[in-house]
Length: 423
Image (cartoon, rainbow, N blue to C red; front, side, top):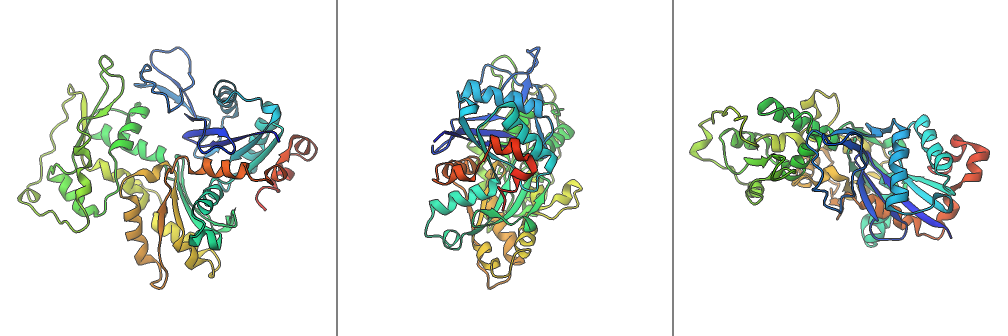
């Protein structure tokens, strides 16, 4: 039995490790970056190690995957090569690879991927899986008594870095005809936050890493948009939060000024209609003090994830998340629909925004027939969930027989080999 490498090759993060383990060996950003202090592009260090020594202010970034498609295979080869030799310490020629690929991928990208795996690295065999079917597999094995496990079907809502998919899964196969996509993910949210901050206070259009961090620490999903907009306008302290920018001397990373205060918005449960005298007075928006090394975030905190529910805010002619789920489920056989509504799983890094699940439940309920139950579960670790499913699949006894070997690839070519994975 050869060594099996499980590689969840995301547009934002690569999760990689040995099949059969509980957690990946390493999680690294799928990019190269060039800090201002460096002449050349560098490999990011794994997320588990604290890389405080590198100042990423205004660092340039190169990513091999754009909008979910592999567009730069030379760059991906460079990143994988570093991953396999320096981080995983494996020999591809004596290893199998379980690789994830987003649904609805195009043949030219699949061909490029296969060439990377077999021709550049020389892996002995390959299995390509949709991330969503791995999430289903993991959840079904973790909760053997659930509806999901008994009926073997679920609807996986995957909000990643490049985009968001609503994917019905039946017996570990994705129902491709019913998959719905919204072209919004972590990258778009960070870019939108950059625009809002740049427009209102200081220019942060080049600060990808900084604003990414601010987004992860401070953004949340509003449960009552109009109320929260009013509160933000009145300068209410429940919503305002301050993010301190790095000064390059004492600290090279940004941080939240008062982390406890930044969680106050959680007290705004649906019931509270915070009526106070201050509601009527519209706070004057103070002109940003350019010398002050911090940015105040108010309504930006919830307007950024709001776009997932209302893509029209960004001028996108696409349905919001709740409607996207309903469309995906409605495209399935009527026998499956009640079960799918009971087994909605949220996965992917962008589902980590606080209150996202509550908001989604509130928006779905009116769209779903009354006699259907709606049950949404969040994965315990939305970032590692796909990898854990892959690790589980890799340790199953018939995994080897599901793979395509290097010899088969050389005889039959990419397109012919691909037919094995998704049928």
